[in-house]
Length: 311
Image (tube, rainbow, N blue to C red):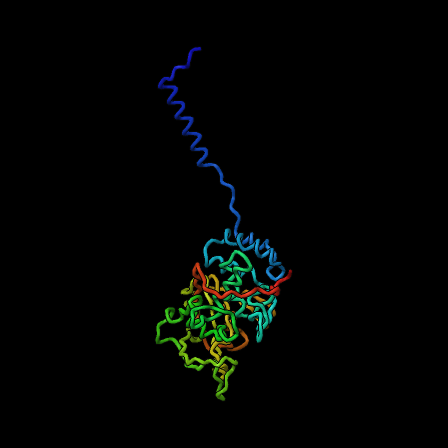
């Protein structure tokens, strides 16, 4: 059988066809990507999830939101609508037998810290371990064990000293425009302890006063950050912070609201400066969220059957 002759003309045509096919492949339409926030809206609400559903949800969340800060923001948004109940986190043992972590209810601090814990977990158990790392202080031996005494009870103390919620207030405006207060945490005006901790801390806190809280300040914030609200009427009780939440996109506050009875999202400046009166607070502290180390030193604790979510 005679083989076809490979002439210069044939080779040129072959090259031309190959280039045409390559061009068509490069200019072809790609499959549309799914907006991760549309995916998020389609997920069950956290307070309705079982432990097994959470275990399936968290790895998918990581795929849709691979960036740490974006994932924290996504979880905060996902949790909007969570029923409000105050003081519902504990150590699963006396004196506070509430769960170490939960999704069915939340208060202001619970929303922030559990969001940070779930944002770095791929299972419920992993999130619980993260919560111990975030919500408790190390012992003198360098171990974190969830006890009532070792919990970060005071937000100002936590923001100033916890490596995962780091104060950046002093970097946002000139130092001379900051306000400050020195308070002995957990020490009431009458000399008694507020909480039975056998602990107190004298702390000078610098914060952003009301006359510096404006659109210009908002433009300086990270895309996701924590906000703690200074409450001067609490100073005599050994407390600096009366509330906290999260600010996203340099504009919106997401927080567990006692008055609304659930976690809500609204413009921060509208919340802080109500049209019908003066601000409820004397200023704010701003803090950033830092990721946990890859390896945690946590004393083993047996998980109880109380998950704090629908089973």
